[in-house]
Length: 216
Image (cartoon, rainbow, N blue to C red):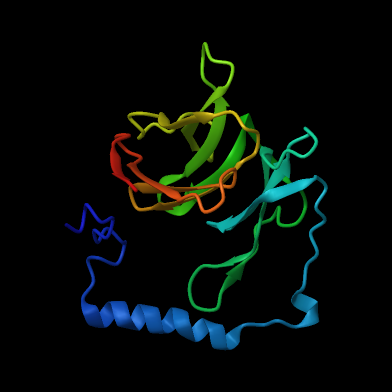
């Protein structure tokens, strides 16, 4: 049941007893009392691209989407990321040597409706796209593309790196999509704005083997 729900205990602290885990969590919580928000700690990072709605902080990176060049299109054509300073243990702070110096480019082969990340554990980027169905002029198909963040290549642990989710009529940007990764599961929520009071659609997949866990 823990595996099916994505709650299986595979954390790095799983070999420690309850007391040691609590001590570790208390130490992490105590760091908030030492948080320094003074003006001297502030850093401004200029954004040099037309940003989209996609943004994330994961594993020491700040990731920001680049808006499509097509007018009135809300999709993202690329991702850009920069390094952020981070704490390792205790109150030691270790900024990356390239922090704030540049934006790094993560190209997307197709324009994305949404992107979600699991970088620390899986080096995983899941890109939700909508493309024309081959042989059809008015039908689109939603895909999940599973990539490695470090290389941009297909993720080697994904048995099905291109997951077909849903076919729908091509009605422009009439779908608001959100997605997230929880353990081995990817959740995709679709909200259709073409029809008032239309029900949202929820899809859950196991990204390791590409199997569908839930549709609702």
